[in-house]
Image (tube, rainbow, N blue to C red):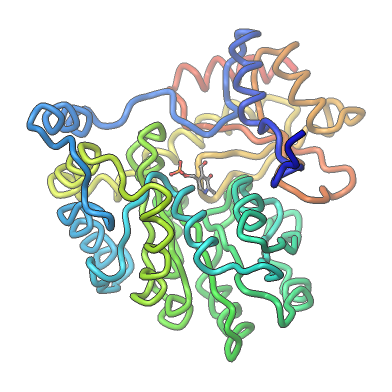
Amino acid sequence: MIQSKLPNVGTTIFTTMSQLAVQTGAINLSQGFPDFDGPQALREAVGHHVMAGHNQYSPMTGLPALREQIARKIARSYGRQVDMDEEITITPGATEAIFCALQALVRPGDEVIVLDPCYDSYEPSVELAGGRCVHVPLALPDFSIDWQRLADALSPRTRLIILNSPHNPSGALLSRDELEQLARLIRGSDIYLVSDEVYEHLIYDGARHASVLAHEELYARAFVVSSFGKTYHVTGWKTGYVVAPPALSAELRKVHQFVAFCGVSPLQWALADYMAACPEHVDELPAFYQAKRDLFCDLLAGSRFTFTRAPGTYFQLADYSAIRDDLDDVEMSLWLTREHGVATIPVSVFYQSPPAGLRLVRFCFAKREETLRQAAEKLCRV
Ligand SMILES: Cc1ncc(COP(=O)(O)O)c(C=O)c1O
């Protein structure tokens, strides 16, 4: 028998629920991906670059034309001038960026603080680096940081804190004041940050994203991660990037060049073209997704689910305690899929120790209007 390095890792709930949705014919609002395509010009550009012969390795750090566009966007969105050669690395997905950042920094015996509920790739990546996750629950009902608990969790072994804003699964946003508070908390320590900002452009109700890129002090110790998959509706392209000060980028690149070496070349060419031609795409995203969130929530208002509209991401949490308080959220998700034809994700799977009596499921609203209408109709009958 092989002694597993990740004995606690099995098939993720995302795979399980998506498979169940296919088997049962349920509408799949579980896994986070759009059921519509990215911009036509962007997709056509991939075909163009494949035919134009852009099919060999790109530079290890990423295609210069794309890094240039990213640097421009960062200057425009967050007012920071980054050095595209020293500070930006393009990766096959945000997941690889997070993995490489963790391998670069975490040593055996180190502790990494994660704020539960959290994205499922963090812990295995920490464990493969020989570290240990210290789970600090976010405060309910708004999934804000519990500063006392975070302060209590710090130790001389704390190597790194992983942030995620806008937050999957809750949609919660970190404010500029909270970034300030974090800066005060870790000032004088040598704790680093991974700031997972893959939903940076999915922010609603006029709010602005408080990026670590716009915070001088925190950026000096941070890897800031983003994903083209989320921003351009092309999750299957698995193309992302990480921005970090030169010394941190240099360490991350030592790992990245032996994990993947580089991202997929024609995709990078296409993204560079599209970003240059259509910089306004990112400015249009909040209204685009807010309309979907509001449609879904307005329709769900006729159901027995209770919820507060998500401030960010393309996920909407809903409390089902008025419907089936006797079921835990995994049972509820299976029941909803099998009996009512809508697949969801139970929120407890994002926790090490879920709060007792948690009755929340996550719906992905990155869907066409007709999908959202059909799903809501079913959910209103539950
Ligand atoms: C919080 C969070 N981080 C990272 C990722 C991974 O992004 P990518 O598909 O670019 O690897 C996701 C995808 O769902 C996510 O929700």
